[in-house]
Picture 1 (cartoon, helix red, strand yellow):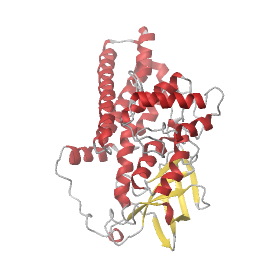
Picture 2 (cartoon, one colour):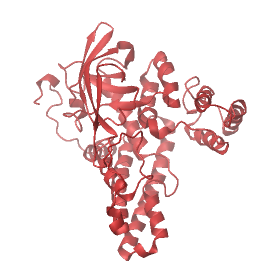
Picture 3 (cartoon, helix red, strand yellow):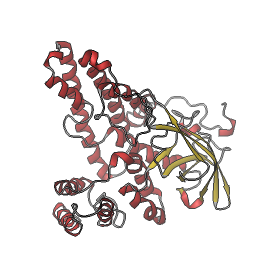
Picture 4 (cartoon, rainbow, N blue to C red):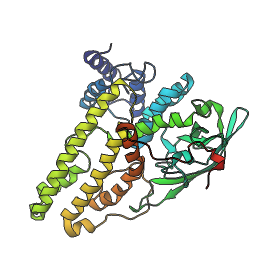
Length: 393
């Protein structure tokens, strides 16, 4: 069993062999992956050492103290938080060896081709078709709300491979090459002025069967691994005290006493406590993950994340008064990442509106918590045993 002292020794050996000050950033990241110090809980040879997940903090602390470069995780959040754990669980040995290293180093950015114009909250109703031709699948359809598709090299994709069975049963999971000539990425301008989201049109996109993840028709089960990890990645991210949205409003409160009122003070205290409770709960959830794959509990964390972001950003706009109505830049941009704390209060207020939609709508997540966490009766579903091709659309 690898312990903390052993990990410190291995990390210092990495730093000695590849001094951060004189080593190319990408070369250092590749060496870190090969040394098993990328994500220590992954298996040996795949960026890890089979060590307990919580020991990653030991490695990260040593590297940060030495000024080592990181892999700019926010730029590839979908790859690291969603694609990687799904590939690890369901991928073949060849797929794991091919995709995990450039994914972790950031050489290959990933996006998620799940939601469709007619299949958002009801994701299993998706209509994108994949038809097999020998050892290749030909995919046609449209996806929407695809974060970072304009920067992505690869995508995780679910498509319908059998329309003659109920909707959950006829789905297969693929790894899609975003450079295929049939992939057309178009920007979706948001209320913030940016276009971090996209719609993606797939026209005769050819995916080798070697890029199928899991069995044919088992895509819904594979997708649940992705979705559970997505909710943990969004709602259970590691933050310091006053990290995230509560940080800027707390800073303004301390530095601008002329803006304070009794009512705002009471609201800020309440939200500060809730943000701290949420942060500590997320830490406990991450510790529970050491024992296995994330479950439906991540839905609760994501619910709290969305509500808190929207309430805190609303309070910040009110606290700043007229200043809160200002906005820095409406220029159409296609950013590489979402920067909640690097922009102004107006941006945070507008962008947080999407938190209750992306990563599973609030309504869907409430159902998940009710049924899978609290054990309440499921809502009636009249289409459960109806073939997808016979559903009204």
